[in-house]
Amino acid sequence: AWPTLGDGVIVMLLTVSADPYMRYRIRSDGDYKPGEPMLGLVAGKIIESNMPEWKVGDLFGAELPYTDVQAVPAWKAKAFRRLTGLISEDQISLGVGALGMPGSTAYGGLIDILKPKKGETLWVSGAAGAVGSMVGMMAKHVFGCAVVGSAGGPAKCKLVKEQFGFDHCVDYKACQSAKDLAKALRQAAPGGIDMYFENVGGMHFEAAMQCLRPKGRVAICGVISDYNKAKMSPNKIFISNMIYTEQTIQGFHCLPWLLGEKGHFLEDMAGWVREGKVQVRETVFNGLD
Image (cartoon, rainbow, N blue to C red; front, side):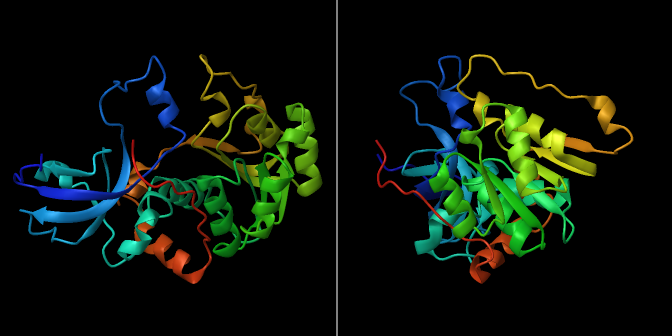
């Protein structure tokens, strides 16, 4: 049945996202209820509206149930992100990628948490992924940093260097321990690293701390190595080493930038995509079951 327009809008979803954090939700102890639509990040267009700020045909990004056509009340639609004017309908998938959660995570973590300076060295784990690749491209092509990635296997490392423009990439699958990984990182960055963007956790974090320079910064937004585990793994860290080196570790999530509370994420990222400073590589499947 066609939804009834209330005080808000009726929307058509054009693309939905499949993200690593969803693993938590679909586990047996997660909050997803079988038989109900998955809730997640989407992009689409307005097809009916009772709100003056949203007109028919406007493009938006939001968090909604994965239902093709649905009515959204006004209070909820006020949190939509306006994509009209930034991209065209045939670019709508950017609304769940570079202009969505992955892009805002990369943007906020790099710019406001790590605060890159030209000439500094950044290490990024998960460098072939959605967030990690954009972190590295922004650091390299916008801020003038030296960028080292970490990825699993020669093919991914080749992608990270050749398509995304990283200076070096460490193949973590060739490393058996944090000590091995730190050794490989030192070969790529003999002077150590000034910044580490954490997507993975585990031995990556410990290797990064072994190579972190004085005044080094660590931004933590993901620990994908633990997402399938029943219990999270602790990390070993010597906090005494951080005192006179003035190192900082900060966790964060994307919402302040995604919702426009901090920075100018949508405008900045859309510009960098247009200029080719951030390359977009997408995996697309058509249709929903």
